[in-house]
Image (cartoon, rainbow, N blue to C red):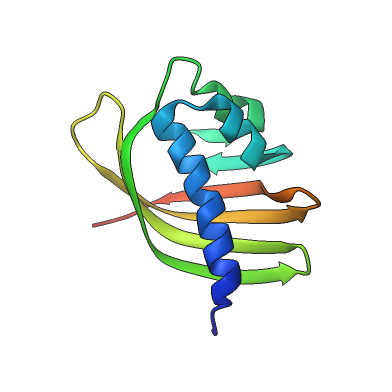
Length: 124
């Protein structure tokens, strides 16, 4: 599969804004980057945009992260999926975690919004 490098760079930047919001406890940026109808699918269940952003009510949830192995696939003119591996440390924890993430992004007049994200725990 041939990568669309421009789209890959654009969506990687968007995804990093979400992760940076988790590190900084930045609710406003998290809400801005997630579509109003956002659906997250996690090992703990489903999450709406409000639930995703609400996790930041008590501050940052992630101390550090590293995203690698990015892949992008167009799903139409204004939709694409970005998949990658995330290695990260949750706030208050000592052991790092790893997961594979696939996020569907939708292009809107004012930029990309994440409409769907699913995490899969990585086996080492």
